[in-house]
Image (tube, rainbow, N blue to C red; front, side, top):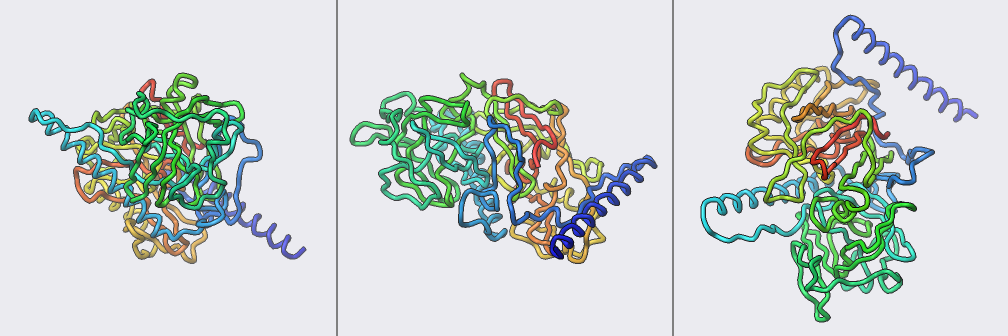
Length: 466
């Protein structure tokens, strides 16, 4: 009884603090001075020990969970050091920058000479952090896979395995599925892969090398893919991996949401339209969703989806400006237009051109002088120690895109909180001024992010999930 009373008392105190914060902000606005600050209880930014999921969920939506947290379907690796996660994130970004730089050099050579250089760059970016569960085969067998907008090929580990890592569920056995078939190496589908070869039996072999040194090889096959009980794609083409290694954790494989012809988006377009959306939860102890072919929220604002010819699978947008505390930063638009900006579900921390990040960091620091600094955390160099504080205020941050869309970053996406004593600004600067900018998944939290490939636009709808 005493513990129940204590728990109830703590809840009352929590609600009282929230009420006081609300009254403070309302009072500021009433005097015509919008606070342009987020005020919150610091412990609300820390993940809980138990998973919190909506009681009533839409069965047509695939539940999205963070692979390292209490909602994860995996029974190990839930507590991974933050520095390790951020270092892996940098490896992904480095891979992306190398690909973008190589593509730019290819484009220059093509325009300046008659040299013939292959358009396909091969490889992929690295492994992501968010997981969904989908079904393969007949009868359906469920598998937990990472989803990634930076990859095209969907794959899962398959029997017989030559060299496979340990995954959570039993490995898929294509011999037990009545609808599985392999694809020939001279098929059009095989020819669409970035890297492929022929087996001794003339079946198509795929090969994907990721930027973090992970890799998968296997047979290109087709089978029934079940996204939900009512959303089924017969004859879905995917990789049946028999030689796989790297940083996939306990996931069975990967769901590719890029713009390439073999991606899930392209294969599902005839049935659902080339559109998908997701909402990434505010913490690893909450859940979000992924939908294929569903409509957007009423509050969604769109920006044009741009295409870089040498990187046709990726989703680019035009970032025009950044606001901190309601004020636009003095950064020339050419700083963003020179590099281009990529939307990516697999990158964790948003990367900005060095000069833009320097201005953002300076403006943010000016609003945070009341808090003591904390040591840097991997790639994050602006950190604070909130020990002893119950409530915290941070300036609002908004990313302004062409077409009238603004992503007003949710308060859970402004700071990367490793602990109460180390909470860092969740942005980082690129090493070089010509490196592509990237909008990472921390800044996308709680938004319904809509990728409408058919209409070439990307939308943002706020407060779509917990």
